[in-house]
Length: 160
Picture 1 (cartoon, rainbow, N blue to C red):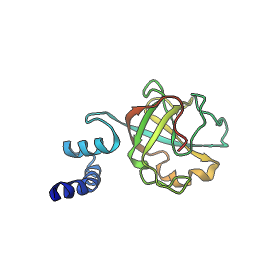
Picture 2: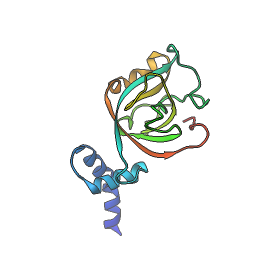
Picture 3: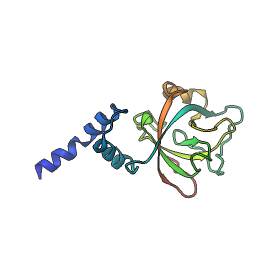
């Protein structure tokens, strides 16, 4: 029993180690990360170029393309021919980023918006109200992110 508990306690460290070896074949690490994110082993991960957007910018409304309220640090705009709207996404590079409520991001985003400039492997992440809301995420702006489809949602994305 103690060995099992010790093995379970080591899982987060193994997952971190496997994520630092992005180009190696690591089936056990893939299983662990899959268990943590809800993704199935072998689920394709997209490498997508990220841009940020905020409320108050020209052309940005309070509602997404589904008619739902945009949610800071949760709403993602995607090319719906590549990723269907209503898809739950896991973006590992956003894990731990600060949330508006003071918590830490868990890496989950909701594909509920589209944009005219979002074509192919691009993703636009909604940061909140005003340009200052983009500050915690600026290191990710124009960078390549690892985006994995991990599920679907009905209705509108959760408000938190």
